[in-house]
Amino acid sequence: MRLRDLLLVLDGSARDAARLETALELARTVGAHLTGLCPLELLLPADLAFALGGYPEALALQSAVEQLQDQANARAATIEAEFRAGLARAGVNGDWRTAPGPVGPAIAAAARHADLTVIGQDDPDHRVPPAGRHMIEDVLLAAGRPLLLLPYAGRFPAIGRNVLIAWTPTREAARAVGDALGLIEPAAQVTVLTVARAGGGDAVPGAEIAAHLARHGLAVTAARSVSDGQIHEADMLLSYAADLGADLLVMGGYGHSRVRELTLGGVTRSVLRHMTLPVLMSH
Image (cartoon, rainbow, N blue to C red; front, side, top):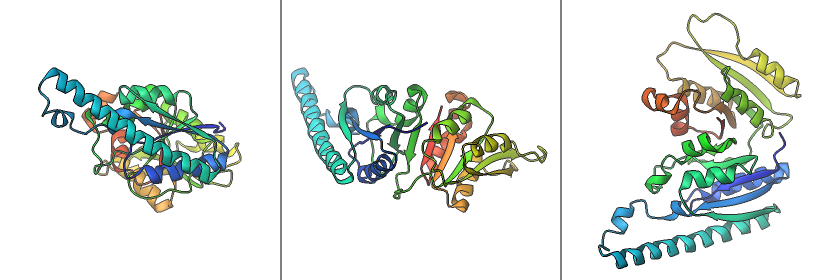
């Protein structure tokens, strides 16, 4: 898939500049159009009950809500100005949107019209309103399009030169591999890693998908890591990525039901919480 239409979610946090830098470089490299999207609900106070606590009467409450909305619009205008300045600096074509209403559905609706959505990992130092606290999961499950997730720490000017693919023989993983082709540079080093249970034999389950990627002209290595069950699979993936010096992790998201992931502490949720490099995730 050739990337021609990118969506970048900006939320007014201190990480916006780093996310914009990454998205602009990616758009410039692949010749894509970049749309900046600011969900207005993310610009509201993290604790609305506290923010509105001094306005018990109905008319005063309405006035307070309107004031908060005006403040959100003013912040969005500042974010837009910085985004447009970035477009001009990088020589990238793009446009700007704000999105009223619930955060997850608003981003998912916009993401359906883009090849890839760039969005930041939850930042513990930047509290958002309750509706935005499961934003990534909501968008991943509803958009039908891949997400490029950027960690809340670090800068990532180059993505797709040293790629680790977390392979399982599932629909989600297969979709992620296909979605990642537009991000992987032709000269990239690609490693397909399968995490297997001890006693599962010596086969390398990723060999066939590695051969498929090699037919796309990529230099691919298939690898297998054996888990004894003591270390979480997500930790193994992130450790392996660090050892490789990978600049992108590719994986399917929520191969089990979301409820089961919540109950058992699945790989998707662990990677979302602890990622140390950009992650392309598809569902």
